[in-house]
Length: 471
Ligand code: DUC
Ligand code: ZN
Ligand code: ZN
Image (cartoon, rainbow, N blue to C red):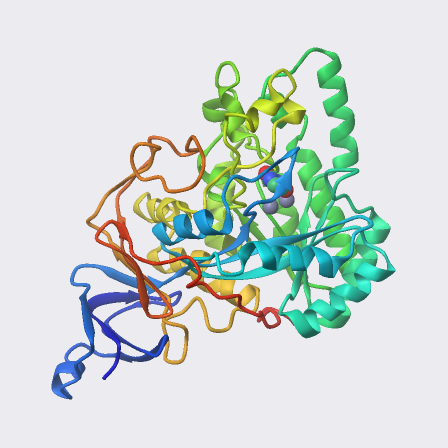
């Protein structure tokens, strides 16, 4: 007898929607049946979930999170336990977090540290990318080792944050060449950090210390310039797959669109904060309030059409994925480190709980189709980063499934729906015309009836394969 059958729902995939029943056994999807077939053959499961009037979609895959990241003199406030629990509340069943190596440190030590933080603490499955903060002979060798042995097939480099994670162009080229040889994807934080540091110093010298100056000193042109440079370096390295993270500027999007049009293997993601939030409405709020929305890349002006262009980019597949860059810091004692100096505000926004919800609102608002919602939140992130068992509802895949109620409603806010370990919500007051109803992780129900019924330790480390988007 199968473990679970989800009946009477509309199964939505990246390519269409059908009425049907999802049969789950031994953590996997055993079958997808046409309506009535289960009755005809007398199929009964241990548990039946009635999804009448609801959508049945693959569990969300968030490929950009930073649980417990040490950054800006403090640590991101979600642990792997609190962060993955909040993710489950938001219909996410897999995250890919970033293990960290800094210049002079051993890559495997950094990875070991991340395993120690996550092991036994996650409510949902998880994988790791590896940040390479110091490209040298040792870290280049380690990259190959991680691809071959550790299930880590993507590496993030930074063109920003000189003295912290920054790589120069020569280092980037070498890492790209290495990634090309091993089949890895190179992920890039594309902002010109050297120029940004000059602008920051000049702003502070003028007494411009409020949070909004974070955005003014990280102009869209410097995101566009760095994106272009990364694209050229990837081309010179032999059309190595490049994935530009947390894109916020039209200027950067244009570079990616052009490169893709030329046939280059370049991809990009954006995040809900860049689709919905702006300098004017959030970052420039009076006093220190705007610190809540200090993140990099920064929020952009709502008068410059970035949001419109990013939504269009999602529809056109110039942007392939929506992730969150979940990197939460509380106002109290964390963001407050930057009182009187915006450059000391820890960079990051918490959002892992709300990505699927916020992007569904994009469907309601006519920005995306239902299928594209599933594609950018679930299917493409899994395929992009070698999570072969995730991101689709099909026989043999992991039974990571979300029942979504289009007639439900979600009010986001600290006193409303909010399970992340952070003392404010970047999306306070947002209303969503839909709701996470039930969430299953490998066949186990982890959220139902507005209750988290999962447990820490259920989530397993997933060794990832190579990207399905390699040429
Ligand atoms: N951007 C953020 O906002 N936080 C952490 C690191 C990053 O690149
Ligand atoms: Zn980044
Ligand atoms: Zn990040």
